[in-house]
Amino acid sequence: MATQEDLEDARLQQILLQQLQSLQRAGVRQLPRAGILSGEIPPGKPDQPPATSLSPVPEMQSTPSPENALEQLELLRQKVAGCTLCDELAASRTQTVFGVGNPQARLCFFGEAPGRDEDRQGEPFVGRAGKLLTDIIHKGMQLQREDVYILNVLKCRPPGNRNPSPEEANCCRPFFERQLEIIQPEFICCLGTVATQNLLQTRETIGRLRGTVHNWQGIKVIATYHPAYLLRNPAAKKDTWEDIQLLMREMENTTGDTV
Ligand code: SF4
Image (cartoon, rainbow, N blue to C red):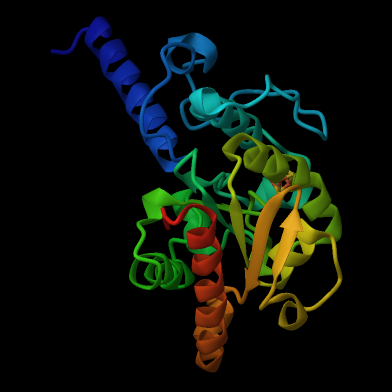
């Protein structure tokens, strides 16, 4: 018969497993030397994010560097997990969807918001649109999803997959700006109108924004159609392929390497 000690061990193992899975979903491929698993995350309610008193703008951590990108992203992920700034989204989400991929990626794909599948799995772009994005990355660019970083404007699913409101996008903006500040990509590929308009702070349509290279805080930005739009309008895949080729040319011209 299991003793109280056995039960406690099993519970701690379960907590540890969930934390590791969560880190993996956030793109963590190796653990920092200390911190994350040594008590900063209070045990006891593994499904609950740590109670965080979150100001509208996340506290700035130390200046990011490649060496501490993993740790900085994990600290930010914990803040996001506890965020309730948007009442409706916080109440209806299954979980927050932070981002996934290489914390030191040259290229970030920037989408709109989690959908139903993403809300369930806690990872961006995992549904049908996600599969198309994976094909673009893999078959089109000859890269792996793990080579890039994928994030959204919003970290919570808008009910019914409606568009994010301007207020919600503004609330979440400090989170994605901080993510990008930590990752320091050389390139951002915006997927769709909402992502492009929010990043570049413009009202221009995606039809006018695609096809050229923009600049956001020194990072080259290419805009193209959202994969969900491509599923509904396959004829636009040709335009997206042109945009991806433009992106690949820019990446090659920068270092002569596409990864
Ligand atoms: S969408 Fe962003 S700002 Fe709004 S509750 Fe979710 S994490 Fe917080």
